Amino acid sequence: MKYSRGFWKICIVLLILAYIPIIGLPLFNSEKPYLAGLPLVWFYSVVWVILVFILLLLVYFIDRRIGGIFE
Amino acid sequence: MSEEYIAIGIIFGWLVLTVSIGMVASRRGFRRYSSVESWFVAGRSLGLIVLWLSLGANIYSAYTFLGLPGLAAREGVRVWGITLYGMLSFLIGFLIVPVLWSQAKKYNWLTIADAFEGLYNSKLLGAFVAVTGSLWCIPYIQLQIQGIGYIIEVAAYGHVDPLSAKLIAFTLIAVFTVIGGLMSVAFINMLQGAIMLVSIWVIGVLAPIVAFGGVDKLFSILGDYVLHQPRGGVFRLTFSTEDILWLVSLITIAPLAFWLWPNRIQNVFGARDIKTVKRNIMLVGLYQISQIPVILVGLTAIALYAVGSLQVPVYRKPESDYAFMLVTCKLFPPWIVGIVGAGALAASISTAAAILHVVGALFSRNAYQRIFRPKASGRELVLLARAFTSIIAVVSLILAIYAPGVLIYLLLVGYAGIVQFFPAYVLRVWRRILTKYGALVGMSTGMITVAIVKSILGRPFGLYEGFWGLLVNIPLALLVSYIERRVRVGEKY
Image 1 (spheres, helix red, strand yellow):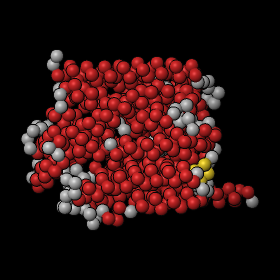
Image 2 (cartoon, helix red, strand yellow):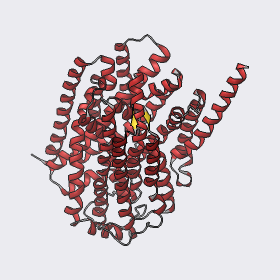
Image 3 (cartoon, chains in turn purple, orange):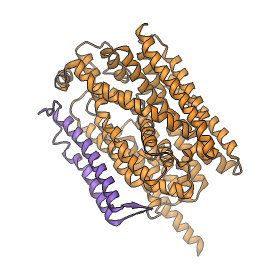
Image 4 (tube, one colour):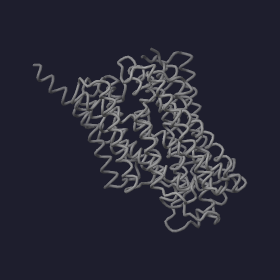
């Protein structure tokens, strides 16, 4: 089992992107304004969860495309 | 027929049905595969759909149905820490798990302890991982037993003694686990995973609408509740500084443990091929999104309490862990309570069965056979695994009865212990940095630290217990590895 070098770099970038919302958390840690009926920080958290899922889809399709993890 | 009989009838009817199907699947499985491999990793034959549903049911349990809405009802915004670490676990898992599966296939590893034994070429290390891994599973099993009790108690509208319900349900699943093996656990989990997903989405989406007409009104009530909550209430719509510290430490530490849980990785070892492993990690992420409607159910519970529609004080523990079932009983007819109760019960039982199954395998194969009886036959190993499974089940049941805890925190304690395996795994696979004794000292001191932080120190600075364990684990593991290497070099010359 091996990883291609380019795939590792992409994964690290995606991992950083997944954790970047930590930085914005104190800025968006507020009840108002309400977005889609949710307090701002709740909306921010929902978007964060969905963002990580999109990154997961990305890593899967990149792996399929370039054979990132291979036997 | 009165309402409690309808709900309970559906719940136990579903339970009997799934157990029967699991047993049939198990017998068919035994005809196709050699007994030991079938019992441990289902002959490495699980395809995409079976593995997806079974892994979902394995991962999502009483903590999803009861613990998560309970935390949302009691503490509010902190619940996002749980959903976030779960989703991040899949991203990290995509990098770790395919490698582990591939090595497991190549070297015929059947358990997580086999992996450590193989990586360090040490039976002692494998036995250590087997025993400590089993012990850290106890809070996880306890969580499921408590959850089953809460479900029965509420679904029976107070007419069934929770202790009796726990004993009946858990005896059934213990018997099932002992008779079956991963093949049957995988099949029963597949059925549980399906009913669980339907229940979560139906109740999660409908509850705020039925109760308040939508999330706008729900949060409007919660906004008022935050200002006027009863004495002892800790519900918040925004994070405090301590919450942020906890969340950051949780979402960076807990995902490292996610795939090292013995039951999860053994479930993955059952995958047919590498493609199935990768697709599953991606698809199981869908379950994590399902936690969002579950959180809404918890919020609906506290809002119903705030407006006086619910009399049970769900703002405090342990009542908060009843939130999901209380909302279902309050807003929906008994037959829906029955279906949802079956889903919740199924989720708890399937996870408990998977864990019990795995701890038996760990003990018999990696502790008993490797250390005491290397020539033990396959039959002897399976028998011993079944005996150990029964002991762990009884210990967990006793703890659930006499020392109950808040569901979500029982889960997190387990994670804090299991994450102590992570440095030993990664720092060996990647450039063989750690040595045998380095890993052993690191893991054991990390676990002791978690136990001390949890039971004596509370949670210093609000940081997650697993963080403190790793803070001791990693430097000591590196130091001892360095010394071990120097000693070896000295002996050479």
